[in-house]
Length: 464
Image (cartoon, rainbow, N blue to C red; front, side, top):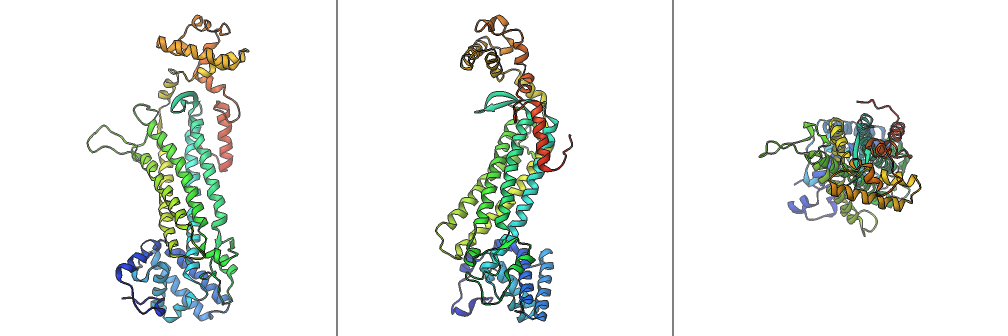
């Protein structure tokens, strides 16, 4: 059995299954490069402060560099008996360079070490998610530019409401993603702090320079309180919260993609690369990637609730409960990055059946508001105009037609304010074009919106 690096105080060893239950190496090995990066900065700081000799510093740094090369080549093996990534790496270092490797841990604890690792890890992954979110926004912009004047049914309560520009519908998700991106960007201010040097909870008696090690690691600052430094997991909670909102938005769009690609809607067709077939029904083309993203949203929510529950009621400073902070974080990173990559590709390659959507808006009552607005513009109180329009819709239902099919005399039975020009007003394309209020679905306003979106991204998206 491997001797514990912390075992001096203990007279008995744990049974193997107890070691396995308490070990985190099965998942925190994900932090191997961050752990080595943190150790490298820590050793350089110890050398600068005269806590290690120049020779000791160089020997340890050389050993850490060799471990980095092996880690990148996936050549490292890990032991459950050594519990976590920190002790595994320290043991390998000591085996390679001798007892001087034991000086690596001078002036720090696994408590500030693991916190540093997670700050480093989450800082880079958050930047990656911001970049992937922006790429997804570009995919939306590309489709929006191609479909500014493509008409589509707009819905409330999943009932036909008013015709809209399909680009306008897509751009709603662009702005959701922009808010998501803003939340991740803002969270970097809390992630970009160094806990290194806080020790177990109270700092250290060694004359270390925490600001120097933070500078080496690229952190913007350090925690001001050592107890807060080792016990803070707010930055992970905030990441999981931002991820949950992002997944909520992806799930909403996934639901629409699933509906739009069904035979009942037929508004779009997904590329084969983002669809699957049935093992028994050869005609099927299932939107499985969209369904998976919709389903995986629940696990991201679960990771957020799980960590909040773990942290609730924990006394300061570090507690073993906090070992449960990592798996949910790793899982969320994997889920979010995968979902963003898939969605960007799915939107870029989908075929928009513009003719199908335009046919649909010509055979429903989504232009009823146009008639009510028409009457209101002629001086009729809107509530009265609403009632008149409702009666004409009922007449259409009885006749099995839509508003544009009613004769002028039929309409004038309800109001003599209605004239021949009503048929131009009821045309779906006119209904969309006329909604030219700022942020509305009018074609000119959608083009303004796309221009604003390009400014936000700081680049020009070429039209398909």
